[in-house]
Amino acid sequence: MKKSVLTRYRVMAYVTGVLLVLLTLGMIGKYVLDLNGAADFTRVVSIAHGWLYVVYLIFAFDLGSKAKWKVGKQIWVLLAGTIPTAAFFVERRISRELEAKVADESPAVAKA
Image 1 (cartoon, rainbow, N blue to C red):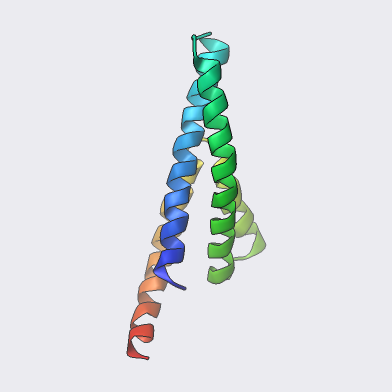
Image 2 (image 1 turned 180 degrees about the vertical axis):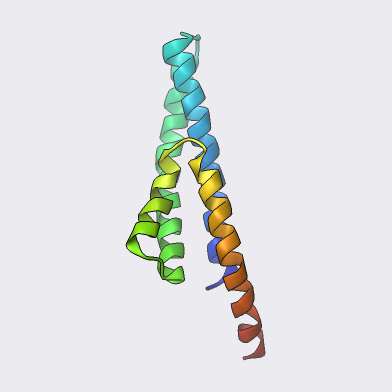
């Protein structure tokens, strides 16, 4: 597995996580605090999160298939982009797990 597969997953995990936190704050501003402009903010962020979540799903699925994860783990990682802040914790755990795997495979590729 190439390091770029892990890197693009990590980037999309952070982007998805930040947008989901912003969306949550926008919803609180819109429905709880009744702030002016919160509806427009929420609409823009929700559209951005929706489209970028699809990209996150593609990259996470690609990573899982190359890492040969079981279905349960794959679903867990895919759903992390739907729970505010979960993407950050899942990304960190997955990165720690796979960085060692990527490092082990890199010297073998360099020697060949």
